[in-house]
Image (cartoon, rainbow, N blue to C red):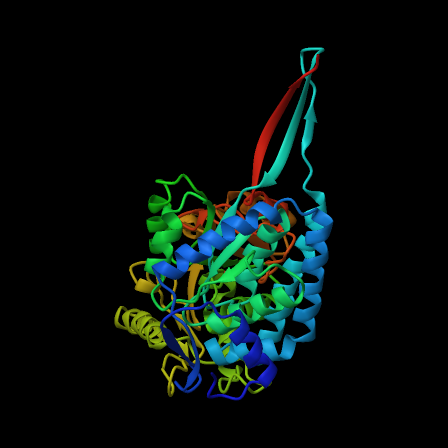
Amino acid sequence: MSTIPISLDAMKRVSRAQPKAAKTFTVTSPIDGAPFADVADCGAAEARAAADRAAAAFAKWKDTTAYERSAILKRWLALMQANQPEMARIMTLEMGKPVTEGLGEMRYAESFVEWYAEEAKRVYGDTVPSQFAHKRILVLKQPAGVVYAITPWNFPYATVTRKIAPALAAGCAVILKPAEQTPVSALYLAALWEEAGGPPEVLQVLTALDPVPVSDVLIDDPRVRVLTFTGSTEVGKHLYARCAGTMKRLALELGGHAPFLVFGDADLDAAVREVAACKFRNAGQTCVCVNRIYVQESIAEEFTKRLSQVASQLRVGDPMNAETQIGPLVNAQGMEKVQAHVADAIAKGARAVTGGRALHGLYFEPTVLSGIKPEMQLMQEETFGPVAPIITFSDDAEAIQLANNTPYGLASYMWTRDLGRAMRVGEALEFGIVGVNDGVPSTAQAPFGGRKHSGIGREGGRLGMDEFLDVKHLSIGLP
Ligand code: SIN
């Protein structure tokens, strides 16, 4: 099924996990546009069949012990670890993430499986004192039911495990619809799940070129109790409204427009390094990448010079090469948006201190822009590309006001040596995640998610498990 060499074992694995469907679609690689794989193109019929299987599987899976589920998750983790290089290569072929960074994503993806394998055993309820001598009050947490998970292409493994490891650990059955750009990574994960002893009906992957027919069926199915989605705010709002009919529980991880505040007292070398890591990882294609870099006036010139130096030295090229730091953007649509944002900024008076141009294919130069104005497109919405706009501010109050002046509220960052300022500004920022002297705060045991138009619910940590658990008050009257 592949025109680009991946191992025979990998091809067999992926084929085994494929759903049965009448049609297929071809996945192409952003590296060179070459076809990479043909996968099942599922529609309404496949979704109905998957929902039937998942509902039947849930009836059994929910009654397994936490220790049984944990053991399967641990074996799944071990298989992921054993196959890390191959999985990273598949991801690179599918969506262009540099392979070295892909290995980092593998470790990140695995950390969710590891953490929730343990957390499965800690789904504690409560006993609550009653005012009546003959009553006992128990609070139980039970698996919510069948989960429909829709995942994006930018973290083909980590956004999947961040959603489905807690769902599976909680005792839910999962139907996963991965992005059409990255179905092979998801199928590989599902194959390993089965090899680890996980029932295949408990984790089913429905690959589809058009998500709508699959989603329509699963959203209207009352047996599907939870929808968890990572993607654009526009689609998230549509799903929010659509799920009202069956009153599903929702976890929506949507767009961001992250600010990074660099204060005058910052350790400049460290700040430049972390802003660069935050901006340029995955070629700027993460929901938590900084989109607006606010630098205090006193250090703005020096900061801009140093960030531009770092950006201009980043190695752009073939993502299969271990030395590469910036690979291609995911597709032509992504490239068009980056080009449009940069052109709009330049037309409105911005200056490209470094970069600013599209290279061959889907590659774009790491770019630092100064002279930014609020009306520029890149100040309104996320660019999802390697473009770093720098804006100046005068004091803390202005920095907070500028940072919060957005409908989005996913991630934000600041760099300062002043602990009092870190606390005050950290508390004032209207975002679900605040990195203080930390450009990459995401981690399995902490909550990940946004406020305002960036979504509802949390992934990761204890709260990430709660999304898949129903709370029951069991009131017992004694004879
Ligand atoms: C994302 O963009 O959704 C993932 C980024 C992260 O987990 O840090």
